[in-house]
Image (cartoon, rainbow, N blue to C red; front, top):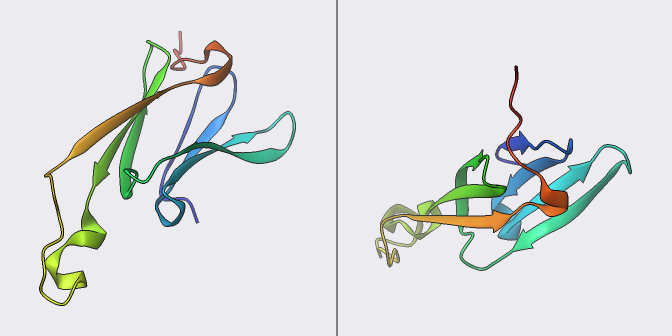
Length: 97
């Protein structure tokens, strides 16, 4: 189940998939969901922003590494990370006029 979704100027919808360490995209023209980015650093994607520069920015937190979920051991190695990925097909933020 996706945590959040955002769409781009090509109509592609991006879904944050914390259980898969990934971002998926849904293409409504092809009626397919495809893997867009997989990376072990995508621990728990918290939110996403599609920008006019043609990138999706994803805030990553380390919720599953907190001490309450790891028998009292804090496994976090950094406080927060923002990752970005270039959108396919020269996609960008949807700008309403």
